[in-house]
Picture 1 (cartoon, one colour):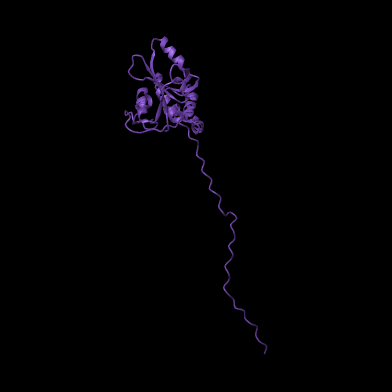
Picture 2: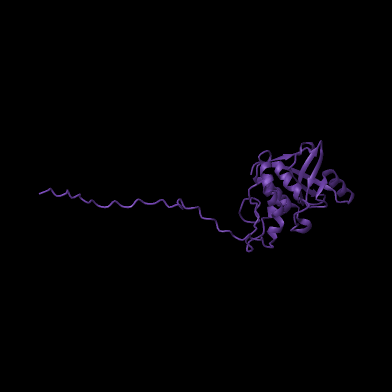
Length: 225
């Protein structure tokens, strides 16, 4: 009798090898495209957009000199930015140059306090800005709470220095401007006043001829934020 063939033990079938998904790793989800938002016709959008467009250049200038950044912001926008307060927009313009150009930080608090300095672009139920933002006399008093230098000689003025003017017979400072250059004592300024760009000597002479002489000019150089 011939031996029977050996029966081979059947083990468990091995699980099928997983096939690599050609789509793995999954592609990064594509960001949903949002329609571009059009800025509304708010006063804020109209008034600060030139300074906002200039912010990148001003930031680069600030690494060299904050004064130069203030000067650049004021010089490039003096004739372009809307005059929110009409003929009395000078200090509002200077504050925007200090904030958007020189990156001076706002200080919040009660709007009539000289310690604060802020602008409100959003909420209609609070004042538009502090008194120190838009009134020259209040801005002058606000600098008592900031680091700064007072410049006493015209020859030492630099681009970016802040000038405050008081007329003869007035008890308060009523005008503000930004120095944009100084060529051996010949100072140029940017302002919202008689003209957007002017020589300081011309401003003094013109007011003297109009029988409204300037009694005092304070020159302030802000330091830090």
